[in-house]
Length: 262
Length: 254
Image 1: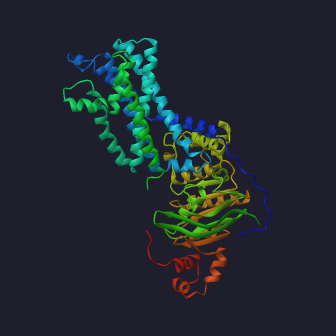
Image 2: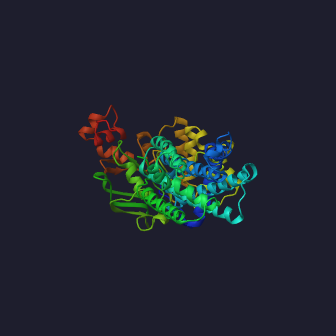
Image 3: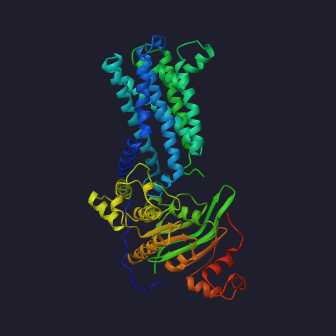
């Protein structure tokens, strides 16, 4: 089948810059994120429902003050986006070969993952702002401007913690189905532990574990950020613990991450 | 004639398992080269190493004049790749996927240009659909468009016609022929001897991670026509499949 013809010289294809690769990936990932109805529910509906629902009923005050309700709503949003939504989306794309298709392009592989992280952080930022606006309009909690900024920054730190947990899960569990089940199982303790850091109703051991759990640390920091409690040694401890969780889980998640599930 | 791809002494391992060993291959410019082998022969592992998806334990891979192990990104930019099992972002429309992959290769396309490209492969009506909503043949055409969006000199196709009906398969062969006329080189893996004979200039039969024989389809048949094992496998006139069976055995593979 070979024809003895002279072939035109083909040019060499240039390599695009990492910034242009990241830009097109960000555009695609953010579009995909906005089109996922489940991610929208997890991002906005769940925290807002919780924010409003915890204020209903005559015993609602026993759950905590308005700031506690806001921090609980933010925590639920962060766990939903970071630990459940992110890890499941990554596992599904890995299972179906989306990452392999991207990896054969000249885009640096780190841009594929960084783009996903930036989109998740963006979702957290929007979620935190929406929760704070709804809290101001419908729950009657308004904060000084610097506390709003502080709260959003803490939400971003919390996002890093729960994204790193999501990364660790997706690094350790290969199958999307197993990961889905594990994510749901983890969801309850991650949220539940954040509830009991300020009370010894379940005993001092549970209180201690709860206070220093990822969710408990976030509760402590959010409480200080919104001015419900003063910034203290415990706040510093929660800050360092959160950074530590992020580093440890990120290292686990990156070290054991595989681009293919088989 | 110069080489579009030259692989020498390639070795790919997965822990203690050796998938490819002592693998040598050369695809000339403008050539369509078929890699044949039973399941588990190491075709996809060899291709994955060339594509930069895994790091080989040993060996050299030169794409054009680029050392692919030393300059991975530059090498990847020269390749158009269609993977065996591939998928795209499930929530993006075809238009957006074309823009994404064009962008990843540094190609900027206007919406009108993207529509023109989709029209070329008869998918203009599907521009707003998701990849998963396409038929098998449409998915294959779209994957091939994405693989060649940056006009690469070398195209790697991993079992491109698997699961396609005869019409879609013929259409793909026509497209591969067009690639040849555009002076692209193609390395494809296939289980179809009919396909290898129809489109490939040369074929290599591999098994257990090694290339067993290389030649034109007609040349391989002529060279092995009188082998006792080939005669035993043949039902009448000797075919490329008879040569393949004789060289790789009759035992079923996973």
